[in-house]
Every structure is written in C-alpha cells, then in structure tokens.
Length: 237
Ligand SMILES: O=c1ccn([C@@H]2O[C@H](COP(=O)(O)O)[C@@H](O)[C@H]2O)c(=O)[nH]1
Image (spheres, rainbow, N blue to C red):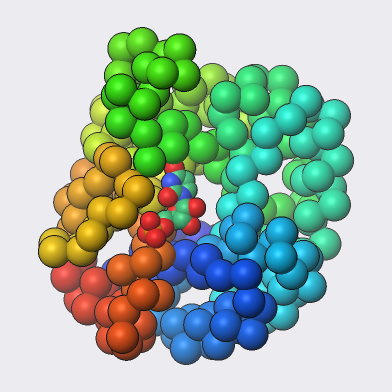
C-alpha cells in the first residue's frame, strides 16, 4: 500500500480532470516529480476508459476516484475489474452502506499486499449544510461525516475522503489511524468554484490531513508545475 507521505510535496495529489487522455498524460508527466500521486476520475474514465489509467500508471501512483456506489455484489465486481489497473487508492461512497464497503474490502483483498487503499467518500465537499439538508440529512455536514466515517471504518475502509473542515473532528473521534484524503482545498486567493467546504492547504495539513487533492488551482494555472511547487512550499513540515 502507498505509505503515508514522507515529504511535504508527497501530500499533494493533483486532480487531473480532463476527458483528453493526451492532456492527462502530459499533466501527469510534468506534475509527477513534484507530488505523491495523481488523481484520475470520472471525467477521464468515462471518456477514455481503463486504457487511460494504464498509460498514466507508470508515471505516478494513481488515486482512482470513481466513487463506486451500488449494491454490494456490483461494487465487489467493479473492484475486481479495477484491480488489474493497480490503483494505489480507490474510492467508494460510504452512503452505500456497511455491506457494500465490506464487499469492496473483501474483493480488494484478492490483490494481497498490492491492494489499493480503500477510501470511503463521506459528504461531498460541494455540499453545504443547506444542500445536504435538501437530501434529507439534518444536523449538518460534521455530524453526517462522523456518522458515515464510523460506518465505513468499521466495515473495512482504510480511510476517508472528507473536507478540510471535518479533519479535526475525525481525528478527535477516531485518532491517527484512518488515512484522510482531503479535497476542497484552496490556496489563499483561489476561486472556490463549486466547492462549499474549503480551507487552505496549510490549514488542512495542520488539522491532520494526510493527502490533499487539488485540481483547478494547479491544472488551471498558467504554469501548473510552478503552482504545485508553490503549494508544496507553503505546507508545514
Ligand atoms: O468530496 C469530494 C470528493 C472528491 N472530490 C474530487 O476532488 C477534486 C477537486 O478538484 P478541484 O478542482 O480542486 O475542486 C475533483 O477531482 C473532485 O472530483 C471533491 O472535490 N470532493
């Protein structure tokens, strides 16, 4: 399994959100030396399929963020289908329930020591309290994140995807063991865009985040390599 980051730059996972496999390759190639892994997600996977992941995989560990969410048998089958791509990290929605998370973990075990880190997505970082309540969840994001975190960790998830704002409450409740991968990160002065629950990279790390997933502030910059290096230089430790 991918170890916890040793140097500050290894904490950063640039999100390569593009439908163009050539652009994904080019970004991965230039960003890989300055980061710990690269994120490939639904945009690239639905456009270019597993072959795009195969091409990027030799350049950097791949955080494959497909956010699986289906009945346990289907999710287990999807995990088995993804294992040959050797992703370092794989996501599924904690809201799929304990049986779904457990089925994914059992399926991932087939890869032995090379199995991906299984990360349960708690509450999407694009949801604020009002948007979450429209889905029928009262009590606010922190309460719901903690509820889903407890469920997912007990069912076999290695870690969680949460916003920077829930990192502290998760560390208080569950200690240092869960791996925490944190999107919704915005360097000071960057546009939030569709992200609702944000903090700066330094704030997220100070709260206890292991990895930071950062997309547009890096890939949308005139010089993505310089943007990545600048963010890494501002991280504590
Ligand atoms: O709750 C979540 C889960 C995943 N993401 C992903 O992280 C990146 C963030 O990109 P930015 O451009 O920095 O906003 C993106 O690939 C999302 O799919 C998330 O944002 N929130």
